Image (cartoon, rainbow, N blue to C red; front, side, top):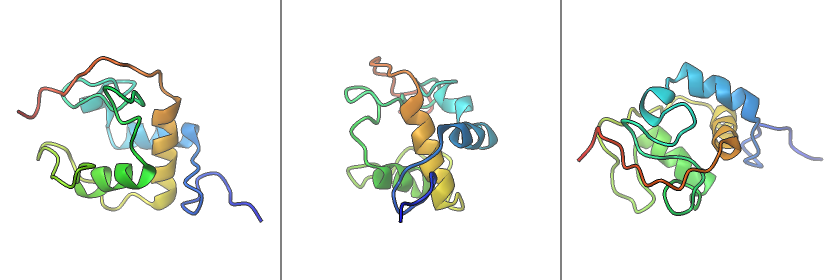
Length: 112
């Protein structure tokens, strides 16, 4: 039996549903319309300037608890979203994967 799109068991998400999560949580207000960075850093799937090397588990930790891939805390300006469901997290991850890759290093301007 295969899992449905958005299932946390497979990590597969639905980019269209992810766009709704992106909009509802106002991610674009910091990361820009396609995640290339603005006040917040570039979170496109660039492996050199974004989160292209991140696993979904690392992404989940960053969004839910503010923990970076190296275990340090992200900037305090990064809102934490602990109540986003596993399916919505998979959808959000799929949405970001579907965005154009931007290799411009943009650390954001909110945090030092």
